[in-house]
Each structure stands twice: as structure tokens, then as C-alpha cells.
Amino acid sequence: MSQPRVPDLPGVGRRENLRDRIREALRAAIISGRLEPGVVYSAPALGAQLGVSPTPVREAMLDLVKGGLVVPHPNKGFRITEVSEEDLDNLAAVRLLIEPPTVRDVVPVIPKEDFAELRTLAQAIVDAADGGDLVGYIEADHVFHLTLLGYSGNRFLVDVVSDLRSRTRLLGLIPLLESGRLGRSAAEHHEILDFVEARDPCGAELLMRRHIGHVRGLWAGGGEPA
Image 1 (cartoon, rainbow, N blue to C red):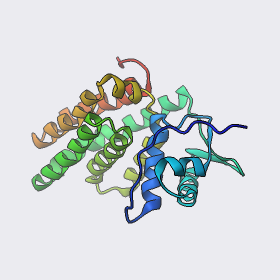
Image 2 (spheres, one colour; image 1 turned 60 degrees about the vertical axis):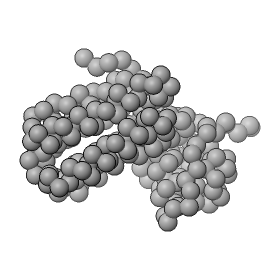
Image 3 (cartoon, rainbow, N blue to C red; image 1 turned 90 degrees about the vertical axis):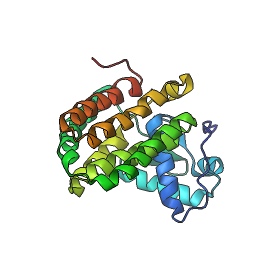
Image 4 (cartoon, rainbow, N blue to C red; image 1 turned 90 degrees about the horizontal axis):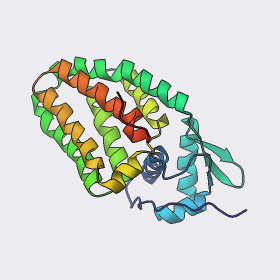
């Protein structure tokens, strides 16, 4: 049986923890749909695209197995799990229960001296969108949101949201990137920070609700949510 075509993936470089870098690059490729649901990919083919040997790719994929993103197929590789529309609805519903009220609650407690760093994190999302780096976009988006939620001081909440985000599929990001409209979505992160810096918890909560609506609508390949 012929091997599936592996999409172009950015190299992961020679960072200190290679396995972690590979895992996050693959996670982002799965979430964005660059690695297609239902398709089995081999570690050697993915390693060739990432510019690394198959061993750390296989180890990273085994990490993703634990999160339900892939299923191992002995002597073949790893199959990307499929997520139904109902699953995506349920994931978004849980995120709406957790994230907007948490952002509302952390707005008054975020130290003013942290604003500059949060702006840097938000700008990383914009830069990735402008540079056409979809994997970088998803990674930067992940870091921004979890950092913001981290001000709650509740690591269990952060872990739950991280897992929910990882299980989401954002297949609509590819056409948004190709059409040049991803930058508008990226800019929403600066808008959230505008409310944070203005100490407007209600505004931040409402914008976060709209933001998650985009995740389930435009970003997932559907239409603009009501």
C-alpha cells in the first residue's frame, strides 16, 4: 500500500528538548488539518519532513496517543483520529463554560507589569499569521490563552482547557490563511488585551465568547456564528 503524501511541515531545529518541539509541531499540524483525519502516517515520512530521525517522531506520536489525537498502527505508523461535528460542538460548549468567566475573573488581578509580555505573546500570533506559519500560529495561540488563564492560579483548569484545545479541529484556518484573512482573527488577541489593560472584565468576557464562537465557526471550516 502506498504511503500517504505528507504535507510540508516546518523543521523543528535543534532546540534543547527535541521531543517536545516535535510533539507540539505535530499537534498543531493535526489541529489545523495539515495531517488529515483518518490517514495513517509513518514516523520515517514525518521525520523526513521535519528534518529529524524517526525515533523522536515516534516518541512524540506516542505522547499524542495519550491525548487521543492519534492511534498507533503497528508496523505502519499512526492514524490521525477523526472528530465529529457533535464532538466539536461539545468541546466548544465546555470551553464556553470555562474560559470566558475565567478571563473575566483574572482581568482585575493581572499585574500591570505583565502587560508588555502579554502583548509580546499576542504579537507572536499576529506575526505567525502574517508570515503564513500555521503551525506557529496554533502554538502561539495556545501559549497566549493558557498564559492568560494561568492567572487564575488553578493549574487543573489550565490542564483541562489545554486538553480541550488539543482535541479541537480548526480545518478552516487553512483557507483563512490562504485568503489572507487569518490576520484579522489574530488581531482579536490584542483586542482581548485592550479590555484587560482597561480593567474591563465584562468586555474581556464577551470578546472571549465571540473568540470561541469563531473557533467553532469560521476556524472550524463553518460559517460565522450567530
